[in-house]
Image (cartoon, rainbow, N blue to C red):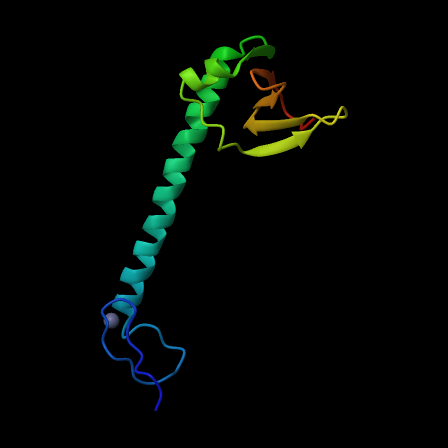
Length: 121
Ligand SMILES: [Zn+2]
């Protein structure tokens, strides 16, 4: 005997097609809306971190290119785990970007901040 299938939303026993996941449209909509909510809340959380990182970099890199200590970034709660994209220079240095503000780790303590306009390096 096949295992009993149940509605993913309300848990009612499902009848009919074996690919059915919900007992009714209402349950499907409720479930899908909640899943979308989870997705959007994690997007909002990450967007907040990226925005904060961008604000920190904008504040420290007014001239478009500057070398600072890693501590200065950490003091301002810069989050090294989040960035929008990466690029490698001709010299083989990896830059991490938060939108148009990028940084590269020069050594254990120093970070080079660069700003890119329009195009990627
Ligand atoms: Zn249901």
